[in-house]
Image 1 (cartoon, rainbow, N blue to C red):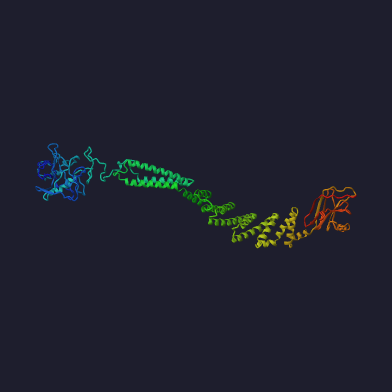
Image 2: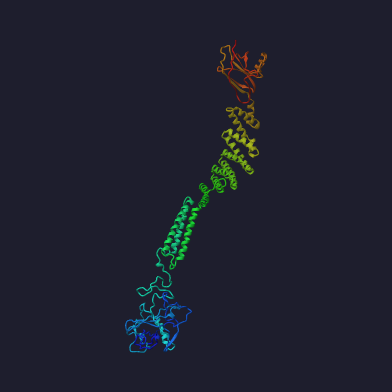
Length: 637
């Protein structure tokens, strides 16, 4: 067998080199299974704690030297260590091969003891191949202890082709160590099993996530995003499910601020537990995400605490869109809006009034428009809108009354609209047409129910205020107006006769072509009744006959002979025992009251020196009452 260490030949029945004592590793070329282009040996890890310089890729490669017919690397002086006799393992430290980069990582061949009978007995030929079928051959390739240093096989020249083919067989039967590392990485201290004790992973060289403190380990992505989403939903619900958004936002801001402070405290604890150590592969992501989350929490807290006015205004606009008018006004006022310059408040009052008008709550609608007109003088657009809404509301109100035959209410609303100072000509024209029609209907309605006064009043307004309207022209010649006047006059005769005179006169003048007008004219020419009451004692006895007369043209100081002609034409009635008297039918004119104790010769009258007392002008229709007459009727002497 060929010794890979010193190159000397040995019998095939021995397992150690007789020259250097190294383990013989003859490899039959029939077992070669992989490409010779792969290197046989892996580089040995370089210890950063030794004084050995770190090999560089620019260093010179190891040199081959001839040993007999073989070529081998120049070895460093071997270190001989006594082991169990007679086997003496040899360790070669290949500084020249230590840290050159490789593409295929194959562990080095480890020395081992060839079990007895590993080679076929009876043959001393090192090239003998009978050992291929030896079932005990695998025992010689079992993994040695980890502490056994690798040996350095030699490269043979072109004459030893079987060696080139056998290297693949060796690699195929080696058991690679599990923790073998590449490059210049310190594997850490050696544990009691002879293996490097390191906290690094098998390939990455970073701290394994499972070795981090549980409080430092990152959450899963879904858990992280889910917690943020749940927190955002809770804060949103806290704000928008509160009857007052600003109050909910203030509470949410305080909660968020507390959460941010707690997160900072938790971050400090995690830093103390190893969050920022260089071996934590997640530290950058964790630091960035924590900083962003804290910033987001502080931002949300600042918005919730400082934006109270904006939230009041936002909720007010939302409530306004929902037609929740009163609460919207309260929110706008909470947002520091007030009269006379708040366009938002004026707009809400106008919208509220328009909504009420559509619901036919016209009085409430007018009240809200009036608030704008009286209190928000600096909101020009809303003032103009309120005026237009007032016009439309009064017109709609009057139309609704007309439709329900409430003509009195309709005329009242139209009249109010016409009386507004800001009712422009277009407003006046439209309102007058509707008002005239309403008055015409009202007059007819009141006449039908024998409310003559209301009917006459409606006809009067129609013919005076809306004289140019078609209804007014029709009423002036319509018999219903005359009927209303006649009925009113009849009622006034029993109440206020002076008003009845005016009614009869109007009827006689304007409606002379009607029956009522003609009757009124006749009644105005009829004699009237005159009455009175003496409060003094009347003369008693058969010789006395107390009487009163109404004479005309009586003057103070009339001569005795001038009086009888006056008395001859005067109506004369007897004074009743109670002192009262009544002239049933006295032609209209001026009369003076005189009285007598016998009714023939002795008449008396009262005067004040300048004129006759108890002088009266008898007019049409009405009874004239002298009232109480406190005059004594003289007795005969």
